[in-house]
Image 1 (cartoon, rainbow, N blue to C red):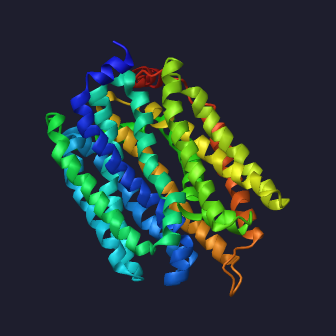
Image 2 (cartoon, one colour):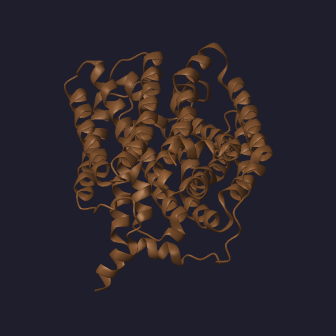
Length: 427
């Protein structure tokens, strides 16, 4: 049976899977629009510093990253459908309450914490259900589709949301976002009967599967490379990208938002095409495992040169878009992490990968904020070129290391090779 015939035979499953993906997209909007698109609004309306604004990301991402491990174990045991039913309500609470908090930073951080706590279930639940409902041979394509739909929420959080913020008050828009998010959650609850949850696994919740994953050296190699690629793109997209393009490249707010918009759009298509490409190449993982960090390193050098030599703004725009392409093609990383470990812990393995990716954002965002504030000129809303020169100059170190590490990761070919690997290491 062809891929399209299989998809047509699963019409009832799509009735629940589409609302679930759209709900996931709403969480990606929150990661992109706040504080990325609204960076200057938080500074102008609330008087927040770069560190305070970066902490809006950190308060979301820290709990999101930490919960990936817990959600991974829970989803493997209870199924993704059950997990989203509970965690989705927590996410909606944070989204709906956020615009009511005004300039009260602690309350805003608490709402972002609730968003991160609830959103932590969405990606891994989709990963779990994609494997269960659509099969492993279609898995790479389904992961690409999940990312594509998810990033569409991030796409709306860039240029379209920025344009709406210039026409309407941004807090009013966030009220509407809260209502739409709640509506998507209720639609998922109404449709979940079309894809009954899997039976609850009799296995006890334990950290032993995580320990086994952590004992595999290739796991850590994949995590390091994927975290570098993902963080470089995401920090630019979600936190400092718009500000960087305005300060260093001299772009207007609209042009900067348009760049982040196309950055997200390119990432979406790279994620989708990366998933399709791996299936067409008989599930080869290593070509993209090496290509993604290599492109990240080359892009870092490009932006460093653009800052140092005051190149035309088109080089800055190209750099941001290339970061997005590299992040999109890194779609193979969670698949490879799964395949170096047991099939019984695929969600936990993907969760561990996601955990490290978002910890990278949570750690490096405030550090980048501190670096920018160190160079801040009193009375100016613009960070000098030296600040961004240091930022991307220091970024060269992990970018180069990620390329070197990726070269030593073996090919899995889409197969679970953990037993073969364990036999080699035990001999």
